[in-house]
Image (cartoon, rainbow, N blue to C red; front, side, top):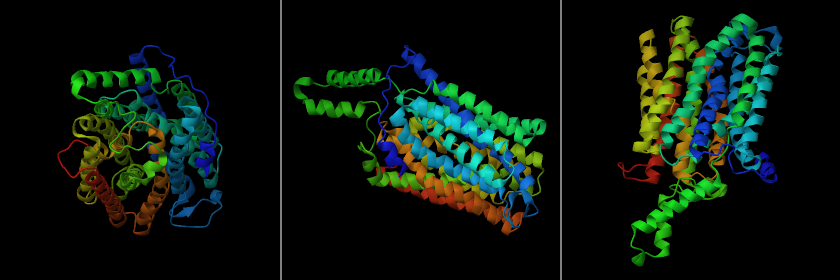
Length: 470
């Protein structure tokens, strides 16, 4: 319904010339702005574990809600609803924003997303009940973060036809840096200005920062893209014997050598064509499962570490190490993906993540083993977010990338909202100790195993040759 309404909106005329005239300087500016956008928007989501701990202390006491919630006793902490709705709304609005940015432009869409994030967090600073926080920090802030994320995560690919994996990895490393920086900053603000004061301050910081980021959100000017395409065509024509090469052959070869803005493995040029391809559904299933499990691990590492007998300080350190490892993983794996192929690396990383859940996290009983798991998990699982747009480019090309990646967000609305709740039920129903903790580890490992099988099916669907670069 919402997508149909947006599709009928008139397109706003956007000046294709970027505000900065030098193309290389413009590209660098876009990448830097996208990095800062990832640092601020998804970064605050990655640091939600700090809020989770505060909300648990405020709204539950040994399985009993405080009277401020107006709810009856239950063993499931109401605080989990805030994070679950936050994630679900986040991915719902990646779909909506993918359509919106094609109508009003990426810069204005980013600006609107920043307003929603700031307003949501600032409003949360006045909330005293769980349902109010669900609407403010869950719905409004989550919608803004999803809007910003879909743009900053895909826009760099329009500027570069080479080393896309490395550059996307650098941009997405911003969310890991954000989690690493904003988590302790949030803790500092809570200790100094209270929970409500910290939400207001963070809301102001994010609305100002994302507003500046929106100034750098511009796609590559059409004249530069046309010039690159013509150079590719001229290169093909000059390298081939024109007397024996038909115009059709030249055009065909040029198409293969063109920048990825137009062509992928599957030559589709519409949303319907993408949705009808089986490759999209294999990718969709993998992403919706892996993303849900990723946030279950990231959100609850501190809580579960305490559940096996570690201190709260050790739990915070483990979560920080996992966030830090995602920074290294996104850049490193992005670089390797340029050499080995995006879909190939997508499969390899998830094999490692699945293995680490079953053989490191499940039997973990000590601080050292948890640190090793955090490093392994962050290194490989953190590559999920940059690999999604890269795989979408590989499959369907650059045209409509934000919209195509946004389509993947529809399925993630349900999984990212439901998985944390199911994990919490396992943890609290089976006991906040080895039984509950181990079940959550197996639950996440099982989800990652299903995601890995879906990626394997995608890889086979594209090519059965195990050595081809895809």
